[in-house]
Structures are given as structure tokens and as C-alpha cells.
Image (cartoon, rainbow, N blue to C red; front, side, top):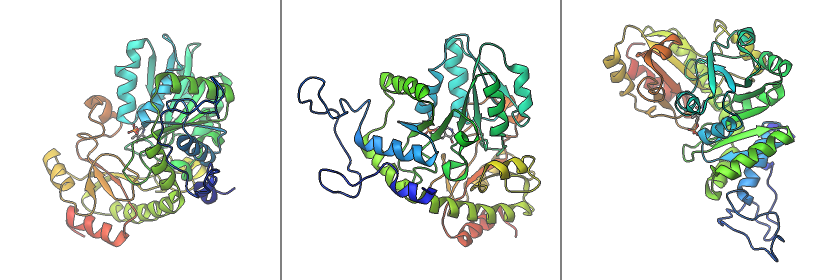
Length: 381
Ligand SMILES: *Cc1c(COP(=O)(O)O)cnc(C)c1O
């Protein structure tokens, strides 16, 4: 089946008891057993719930995966992967990570004796220098947040396979519409479903998708044993959101392209980060592993100090100043004071997360209105 058909139908059949076309919200914590142990596959909703199951099967289909697990947040999903590790294990990851992932790795899992190497993964060969017998996981984010660096998933998967190391890819920014890490050799695709997949800024949720049955069983055990699983109402909302994922992504990409080109020549803009530009340092890899370039764009304001950056960030009328991304509505974000506040200044400045950096999540409104808003907020042109 093709993507658009899977987005609408995968995991979902008319309800056998009533014929309801839409998957019902099974708002129940527990299930009747005819005699002890004689049930219909459902015992308790922390472990399994029919609405969540339908969503997990749909998510798996979108990532060309055999198995899917939904979590109550993206961080809950990431946390489950980290719980595969033991004290002394080492992790290789990028130096331009989602702030919450960096915080979890350094402030929680460091305390449990897990060692992290934060590397510039734009050259995958650098990984080889840091692999030793304790290396158990490579955690990759691409495009990276907020500077849109592209990491070559296929090249890293080759290295991880040679050394029998798990490779997990945070695929939140691309969404399964633009990029499928498992097809490129990764073992786990992770999503903050909160973002493009949910798409309407009304749910916080995460997911892990995988093909290996043994890995699925280990992760399901962690999921059920630790319990960061989402409820049926949120599962229903995401199933509903996914039905337009392909339509929304097309519109995000179209609007993103127009806005990226507008900003590129704007006199108030200094650096601009969007993987669709031919002069983006990893454009060729982006073209190879993504179907289009998405609606996430970051830029720095020429000569602006923190105060001037705050003034501009607060002067938009259509773009909403808020954290998060991937919803139908356009958002503007100041990474240093909002999403990336937990990363030390020296660390973040190394990768370009500076005081005058702003990040756009371009929504699916009429692009003329978005351009008009950028014009009035930035001044000039
Ligand atoms: C938002 C985000 C997360 C965390 O997901 P939550 O749903 O907020 O817990 C992880 N990775 C990336 C790239 C994100 O944008």
C-alpha cells in the first residue's frame, strides 16, 4: 500500500461489534475474563488497549516497520530505549540534539553509569574512533534541531551493523512522510508524535517503530513494566490527525520552500538553515534520504542583540511565539530561551545555537499571509 492509503486505513477496520467505521475510543482500564486467564487478548490498559493498538499498527505501517509502540510522550519513548542499557554501556550521539534528549542523557542516565559521546556526525567516519566493546547504542537525530544539519543514516547504519551496535533515529523533524530510517538500516525509529504526526498541537505522545521481534519484546516489556503509555482518547486524536499527514506534509514543504527562499535574500537575515538549499553543507545527503525538505527553518538576525531578537520574536501576528513544532499553525521559537534552555552556552554556541537565532515551524496557512507577517515583523522588503 502507498503512504496516503496507509495513513487513512492502516491498523483500522470497521469495529466488529457495531460496524463503526472510526476506531472507537476504548475508554477502559480493564477487561472481562471469562475464567482467570481466558480473555480476548486484553487484560489491563497499561499494557494493551484496542484504540492504542490500532494507532501502533498504523504508525508501524507508516515507517515500514513490523512493530510499533506508542508512549505518553516523545521523552517517554526515548527513555524506554535508554532502559535497554546497563551501567558501563556507552552511547554515541550527535552534538546538536533536542534539548530534552540532551538533558535526559546528561542529567539522568549519566548518573546510572552510562557514558555518552556527543560528536559532530556530519562525517560518519568519526564514529569509528569512539567505538569500543562497551558501545551499545548510536542515537541519531536528523535533520537536527534547530540548525537542520543532516546526518547520513545509511552510512551510520553500515558502521553500526559492522560492530553489532543498535542504531536509533529520532525521526521527529522529517516525519515518516519524508524519511524512513528503518529502510536505511536503522534498528529503531523514534518519534515525538506530538509534532508532525499528531499535527494539531493538541496531544503529547511518542512512538518507537522496529522490525526485530526480539527487540520489540524487550521494549514492550519496558513499556508495560514502567508504564509511560498513552490513553485511548489521545490515541484516537492521533489516529484522526494521521489521516491528513500526507496532505499536511506536502503543504508544509511547499510553504517552507517559499519562505526559505524569501528569507535567504532578506537584508535582516544573516545565516539561514534549511536543507533544501543547494549550498547547505549536507544537501546531497538530504536529497538522497528525504523525499522533500520540510517546513522547519532557522535563521540568525543580522547584528541583533538578545533584546532586539526578543522584540522581533514578539512582533509576529500570524506566527505564534511558542515551543513545539509540526502543527497546522505556524510557530516561531527562540531556541536559546525556550527549547534549548537546558544546554550549556558553550555547548550550544559550538553548533550555532546563538542568542540571535530564531526557528520557524512553517504551518499550512496561506503562504501570502505568512510572507506578509514576516515582512511586517522583520521590517524592510
Ligand atoms: C519534541 C521533541 C522530542 C520530545 O518529544 P515530546 O513529545 O515533547 O516528549 C524529541 N525529539 C525531538 C526532535 C523533538 O522535537
